Image 1 (tube, rainbow, N blue to C red):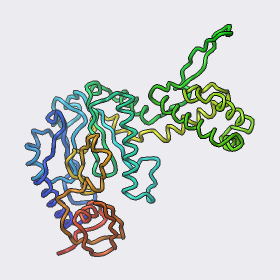
Image 2: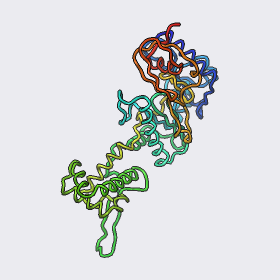
Image 3: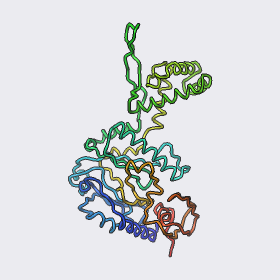
Image 4: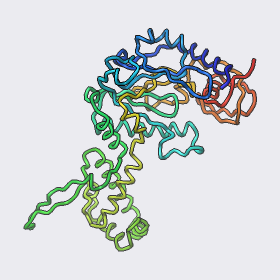
Length: 391
């Protein structure tokens, strides 16, 4: 990035901070703070191990320094400004989750547009929130668009603050479905009835919640689809499953046909061959419904995370705090565009042809000096795709 471009962005970031208030997180004085300035050179330099006492008034600091990125710690400490983690004196941490579109299994880099990537990441966010709110019962959640490629979720329920790394790792494993198998989910229930000399058992999925509910729902959809196909089509379909021949396929169809309600309740013992379908459904459910979070972010009790309300120096978009009511209608490439950069055009020198989707419009820019809306120019310059044109 040329000095002319860097100076322009730093100045306009300062204009943004003069016009916008940034709300600090709870217990701001107990947290470590860090930022990345608009320094020259190919590498960014993190300034960290700062406290609010070191930074002074936050609004004045942002207006004065006009940082490229701003971060605060998930952890809170006795001495947050100490220069080493040992000296800080850890007192607890929020539970933080990071969803990055680049890391999602259903995102194809180089094919999906930025807007498509963010849309898929929002779907992943809904899945994560279902785990956190429904499975874990967390209530004090803050959701934020990262300003870049995804979303952050901060959990601040009292019970999470003292969790150690290994306990946080268990939560990661759960929401990602790591090593989840049918045998880890099913439980045995006793079957009693008239004419049975000895009670028997059956294996069922715990369909009342958690991963058991998710797998049971998928098995119910599978049963409906199988019966809609009819026997011959269903047998041909099942025969394509790994390890399932025509004889087993017909047995599975008949078991589902005769025990549809049991399958929909999570009974996987309707026939021995049906276990292959149940195991397949577990794997498919994990693939479809896991929350592909960035694991190190959640397990790191000292992690620095972006401050909502600030600007992302790699996009020029605002890190937006979102309520659950706002989330459905939130369009990141519209609602996170700062008003400071809307209303006039600037000239930038574009390196390669690009297509941008911002503020509900599609803009194609060609290489060379072009005039574009400032928000588009800031986006291109922040991402290293353009330089500020000479006046």
